Image (cartoon, rainbow, N blue to C red; front, side, top):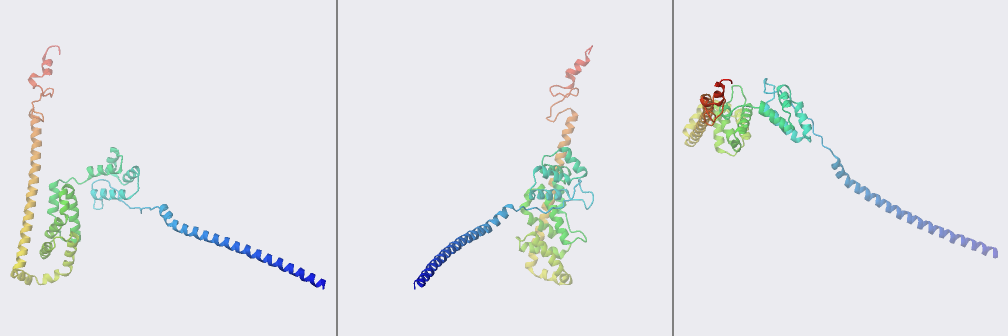
Length: 338
């Protein structure tokens, strides 16, 4: 009996010890799980924060490298059709330099690398400090030297040439207007109206001229490019029909008082514009003649013994306080021993 009780007591103690160990293990497991959950939450937060910071950091470290643009080399004034235009070349070079993150020295080196022949020698001898100074030298020495009158005449007398498409003609007009507006900045706000008027007057097709004048009269706010596109579309679709029914159209226009009135107004405006342009060209020529005459009179006065201010000058020494008979040098030279 005693042995049985002892065995039961031993089993009870072992059971209590086992239960205590189990409870301790469960507590350790719960603590480990809690710590693991805390670490997991911390890692998730750090990962989310890194994902949020990654785009900003990448944007801060991202470097944009502009694609290299091939620029033609300039040797001076164009001598062949493939040679670049000086004004176009300098404008393209300025745009390229403004879009490129280059220092003053790097920009100057870039310009010098694209200058050859007389243009390169001229710029090197003048020793510019920046790229813009180099471009100013190129534009001043090798740029277009036409006068105001010549630029006006080139634009207002430009008509569509035989075999020239409307697209080529319109681009030629825009180029001539750009040169003219550089010499006459007051024309820049009238760009659309001036180009549309010259384009409508310069096309070779008479029926297209009338259509363009009517369109210009109906919608004066239309841009030049839309105006040009309308002309191209009309030539491609309507001209064959107009040519086939030219006589019928002429009869209809003659019978319609409203259309006839519009055409008369357009013709009158066009004639008035041409007359004003002719007067402007004549005035410009007269002004240049007056300037040339004044320059000649000035040179003539100097030859007769006057300076630029109209005072007598001495033929012997060139002074303005006396004339040659009273020149001290002449008197001293005439004395014996001198």
